[in-house]
Image 1 (cartoon, rainbow, N blue to C red):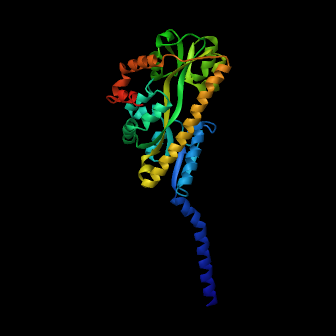
Image 2 (cartoon, helix red, strand yellow):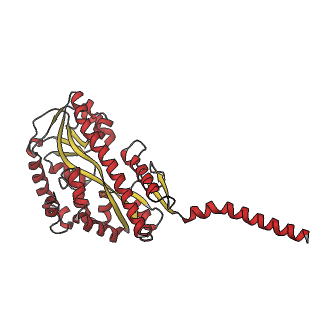
Length: 334
């Protein structure tokens, strides 16, 4: 009798201990796993914004999500994220317009010069009817849902020797380094320059020796690569206002409740706002930095550049896959 009771007591104690040990595991299993893969480095605003995303989600939905941020492309290499999300091996990432255009050709309109005027125009386009329509195409063809557009940076022309640049004709004969793909080279030619393909790592020496006359990049890249040491002018052409997009796998998105979707979208928008404000502020400060380094910073007739570049694209094969009337709708967005 005593032995039997003791045995029952031991079993009961063991059961309680086991349930206590299993409780955290069960709790962890009940959370929705959100693995994030990004090539961004920790000091980049695009890396820091994911912490804002996680913190916002943890605050609005405590205990609901297990959000894991993987920086430096440690989980998936850059460009591999869309396929990983479609397969269900990844929940979240920030994908580029160039990556999207590979699978949704009509999205290439957002990789062309002078389509987006500035960061504010970018947000109005993507957060309005145009964005809604284009993001549906992305969802249908790529099996991912875009939660928020993110400002990546605005590319400017940076010249070895200062010269008056008001209209595209003023860049005639200028050997302008562009990344070595036909899309980038077309953009360089449409600006009025002689597009010259060159690896990024070779640009500094090529500017120093005069092999090329200029290069184009967002201002933070110009500072990071120290191109200001071997150039004398920045022309604020604003020819490509680039974006990336916080996206979630449809498999994950479709399994969520309406309330969870709302919280996730709000977290993505908080991350976007954090990134956009800081990146725009940094770009504004860099104009003064370059002036302090002795560079001339000039603003051309941007409308003349926009008209010239858009005409070049509209008469090219690139525009043939753009939805009818889409360029006009983007231009009319204010």
